Structure formats: C-alpha cells, structure tokens
Image (cartoon, rainbow, N blue to C red; front, top):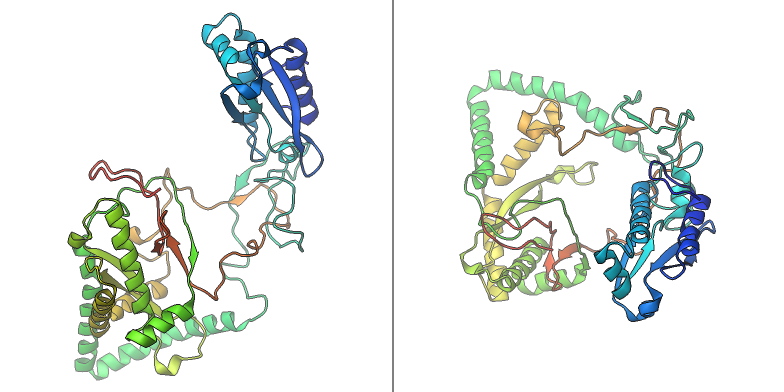
Length: 434
C-alpha cells in the first residue's frame, strides 16, 4: 500500500503499511504485536535494525511511540514518517546507516488503536483515552459528550448560555438551594436596616466602620512585605506535580492533648518542620527565611452552629521554620496563632469575603476577575450540537477521602500542603521543585 503523509490511516490501513516495511526490507524491519486493545485490535511494534550486524536484543535501543490519546493522530503519522525515512536513507545516509547498524529502534505508531478508530470514524467522536470503561462499569453520568452530531466530519466548539442559570439544585437535598435563595433575598433588607440604624445611631455606625476599615488594612498588611524567595515561590512554569501522604487525625489529636494548643497548631508545626528539612536539603538556610501560610479559620458564631453553608475566612501566619526543636516550634506556632486570633486579621478576611459575596464576581475590581488571555482560554462548551451522555467517572477506589487529612509531600516524604513545580528562577538560580 502506498504511504502518504497528507492523511490519517485507520487501523486496517496502518497494518498494511507496517507490513510493507517488512516485505520490502526484511533485513532491516520486523513487525510484531505486543498485545491487543480493549476491542481486540493489535498494538503493532516495528523493530528497525540491521540484523546482519547483530541481534536487536544485543544493541542499545531507542523507543518511539505515538497516538497515546485518541485524537493524537499526528504523532502516529510522525512515527510512520520516521520509519519511512530510515528505510529510504539506509545505505545512502551515513548517520542513518550507522544508526541501524549499531542500534535498534522500536516504533509503536499507535498505542491507542481503539480511540484512534473513534476519531477517524465516518462520524468522528473524540475522547481523551481509550474506549475501555474506567475505573469500572457503572451507570452513565449525565453530561456532555464530544461528537460530530451533524455528520459533517467536524467537531466544533461554541459557548451557549444555560437557560437554567448558574445554579443547579442538589440532587438529594434542596435545602442548599433554599438556604441560598433566602440569604440572597434577605441581603437587601439587611442593607436597608444597616442604613436606617446608621442614621439613628451615627456614632455606633462610625465605630463599626472604623473597625471594618482597620480589619481590612490589617488583613492586607502582610502583602506589603513580601515573603522570602524560596524554590517554592519562584516563577511558575507549566508543570505541576502533587504527591500525597495520609496522616491520621488521631495522631494529631494525641499530640494536641499531650502538649496543648489546637489541631491546626500541630498541623502547622509539622509543616514548618518539614519545610525546614526541605530547605536544608536544598542548601538554603532556614534560619533567615520569612515563610508564611494562608490558614483557614472558622468565623461561625455560636448561634450559627448547625446552619448550612461555610463560614470560613483566612489569616496569613508566619511559619517558624527557623526553630529547630519540635516542641519549641509548636510553642512558636501556638503563640503566633494566638496573636493572630486576637488581631483583626480574621475580621478583615471576612469583610473581603462578604464584599465579594455581595457584589458577585462580575462586580469585583478587574484584578480580582479571571480574564481570558493568550495563555488562559475562556471556558467553552463542546460541539455545535450537544447531547446528553457520560462525561466523567468517579475517582478510583483508594483515592483521597474526607476521613483523613491529605498533605502533599516532597521527594523525601516530607509533608507539605501542596507543591507546584516552577521553572528555575533567573533571579535566584534555584532549581525547580520537581
């Protein structure tokens, strides 16, 4: 079969092309199936080497593959083009000749034949992976499925407004929606009541305003003094990696009960010690670092216990990575958090959250909104025509649950809350976290 590079090949045609290499150059190419796909298609691997100069198993090897994801058809074509170049250049190009005489190339042009068949079907359907259900067979979940619904050979994207609005009723408990509607409906009356009260009692209203402004200023003050530059907060690149380790709540509670403080104090002391070891392993002196963490804090009042919805704000706490002794580190965390709770920083965070909640995301200042850019595309809904179908699957068994806390960890197993993998900074020269 004649091989062209201006089109993609379905599985039967790809098989004929790969067999052609072994037919034309049996001394250079061999073809074998290394397994079958979920739907029973061969996963072909071509072995390219000069068998007269030695067996493939005795030579250094290069592995290339393509079409891991269903729609990555160009990678499959690139593998075919590479094999065609080896065939045509052997004997005339010194580098290619030396390569096949002294090395072996294993090429798997299509790792995912089932997904590729869907992408190349008469009515294409694009999925990310294969057609095998994962993690197990379960009832389909309502959602959107990407498919060429009008049969024109194209899968397009467009935005369409949801006629039902931005909210969706909880499938098993409508109280969440009812509580939100009541809260929203009551807000104008609360504002009117506050204005009326301010007119009647201007001195008290002025005092509350002063407290709110002071609290907001105190909440924003840490941002005016940047934290120390470390390998964890240099310029962020495109790569992310998260590692997880399970830690028993009972262990944290045992430490809390024995040494005092709160559960959060013990967690922050543990993280501080892990960061200290991390910095030391990177050759950074932790004794001179100013490291901070954003700590969630409940602001639910006594009369709000049992009510639906979250009442959580945040405080920025300095982590005592400079303290080497664990007990002293816990004491330092306890003192820091105690001072913060006595300050107005938590109130300031609640004020900011309340402003955002009242104005909505479309009324926030421009810097607080997520704006489309060349690097971040706006959210879109898939396909010109949409039909209901499976969209997502539950997490695999053994994933994180709500019963135990999950903390990120470094390569050495040190617990960290989360880790991004920034590129090496030109300013600091520190390596990335990967």
